[in-house]
Length: 115
Length: 108
Image (cartoon, rainbow over all chains, first blue to last red; front, side):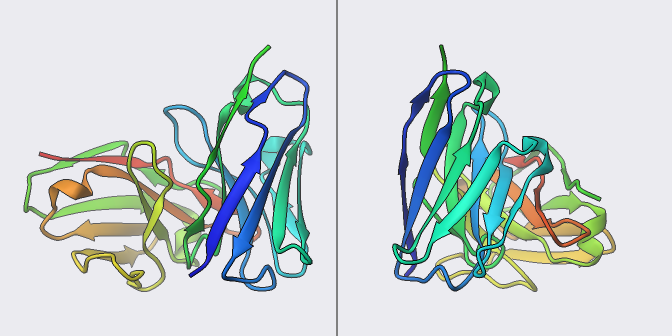
């Protein structure tokens, strides 16, 4: 049973960098694609990007180069960095594995951007 | 195409059958994956591929597709099916993942 546990800062000021990490238990980063998703308050789900088993990442173009997803194979963890955050980045952020075929999700992290 | 379109709101009487649709050009080449989300909870995978349900998902959930439209059918809707439903797929290039806007299903 694959389980994901995520953590990171929940309150940021505008222009700061959002940083979240997701640890994978019961599975290996060498399998599946690993994804970050967010959900603004009262809105739908948005794909942020993913990293594959080779360490190659793909991102949502709407985030305009602000996002980086990386993986640490030795720790079986993957991470999200989003720079220059603004109020519009306020959302619940989720990590997930095998999004299209397995549906393994982290518990979600509420990130609020406020001055 | 980089869009998946869902009806925002759908309702169904308890015990009746309801279909939730998802439209997008990429669905001509890729299966839709369907998630259920209840308030305050992470989404739960309901069905993917050609009618593949994870363990624990009732068989009243099924999918079908035709052309650019994928459909999630709930046969005999139950009160616990009252939730938001999202379709997901690869975009036409296969490089990215796209989400539908979600359908709020109300079981009356």
